Length: 98
Image (cartoon, rainbow, N blue to C red):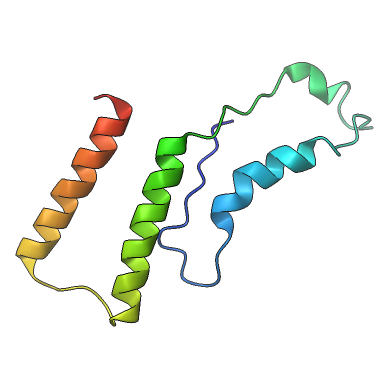
């Protein structure tokens, strides 16, 4: 499984970014006996480590989103949208090495 702790655009409450870590913590409490599946643990399911770059991007973009929400929205200017999209694509591209 690929953990993605992301809640940049969560509009009601918050905490979804903690989901992957909480699933991992709870997985130690899962009962290994299941009447419908024989040895379900034998499949070797695995969660990759949580990527710190994604955690940091989530924090950065969540803060920006909250700033815009508190101000009542973002500019409708096409120039602003174009610059914002270019910056986001560049940051995501550079984190993936592409």
